[in-house]
Length: 202
Image 1 (cartoon, rainbow, N blue to C red):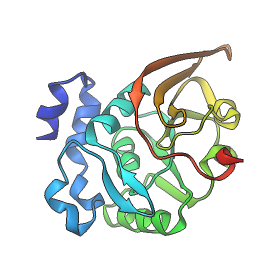
Image 2: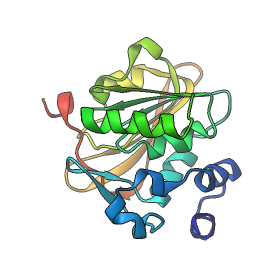
Image 3: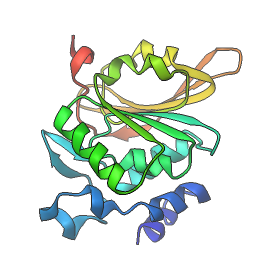
Image 4: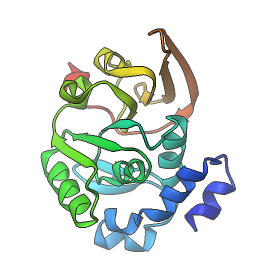
């Protein structure tokens, strides 16, 4: 179902399609919403947070150009679904979730699913994770009003950051750091994510 839905749109990366099929979305969806596990829509997971719709997860994953030799940072991990999709492709994923109960649940779930290449913590994604930087890939699933400078700083040369930006109406932005350290940014289109909390709201 997911492969058919995504191929009918603009998801063409075969590794992304494989990963989306490999990850059981129902494992990341609350019990009372299991009937909607494979619907192409966001679903609530508690604490005013959501699991993103499959198309958006696939799109953001495709935009960062994942590969087996890359290291990724997943900010706003929530249920852990995006981290799992990345982990099917990249070498290692570091996940940050500001809501500690969600971070704990995501870690337990990912451990149960035998994702040994994901490291989780509860923390403020606005400041990234300096101990493990730089990252080839950064995906952010919450919207600040501006792109956090710490995330640009922690992006490796040749790396890509995908992030929703804005208050109310949001734009999905792609940030690429060239090999000589220059920054290129472009807008992909309108999206709707939960606001980034923590330092982003200072």
